[in-house]
Amino acid sequence: MSSQQRFKSKVAVITGAGSGIGRATAVAFAREGASVVAVDVNGEALKSLEKELGPIAGKEAGCLTIEGDIAAEETGAEIKLRTLEEFGTISYLFNNAGTEFVAPLLETSVADWNRVIETNLRGTFLVTKACLEVMVNNRFGVVINNASDAGIRGLRMNAAYSTSKAGIVHLTRSIAMDYATLGVRSNCICPGCIKTPLCERFNEEVGSREGISGKEALNKFVMANIPMERVGLPEEVASVVLFLASDQASYITGAVIPIDGGLTAGMN
Image (cartoon, rainbow, N blue to C red; front, side, top):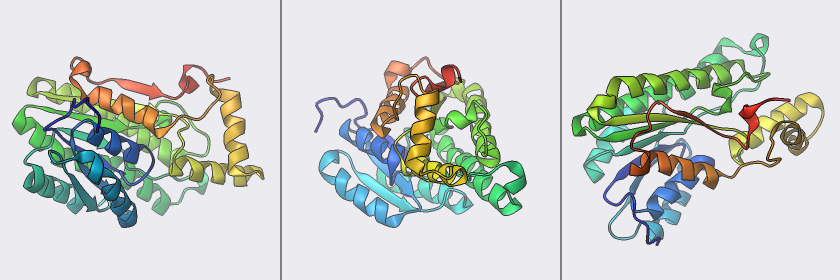
């Protein structure tokens, strides 16, 4: 266990915790003393995460897993109820869960549009509303939303996804402005190309449209657009999430922070 315990006695709720950025963040919070509430639609992934977190969390912290779809209104209510029953409070919320759909607008059905918006934007709203009530009552809390680079720049073949992520950026700012005097901070991260299952699925679809493999599509994009010429790691994103949750970021709210190797600094 790490000697650094920045989050001892704190409770972090993380959606999409079964893989990628969410999983790396759950592990990072546990290593620094927080009790973790891991939410995901994939029950098997949660079981695997729980097994990994067990020896990390130690005796003074714990791990609660909740299998559920954030687009369903009852999931937010369940997160709030079960977290309070298990740990008594909610200190941090990392809204990380999301889904993708690769297509331009004319190839986006109403069902496709609704699925993406309901998961990414409505789901973030629902979970935040449930957890925010606890934070406001405690006059302490930090909300961190994952908006992706798609939330701050245009992406081809991403009408629904980009729209949902742009909405999350402004939801973040609204929360920051409305609840700063009540002890709650709200910030937004915008990861670029990160080594996650979602990124792999995205590039497989892009590659199929171009007649190349997903790996080729990703490499082509990285070398043309990312100054650091590499894909990021989930752990690199997790470190920023933990910083934003920490007291070191006590005067940061309403921020929108790219984590993208320079991708959004300028497009070629």
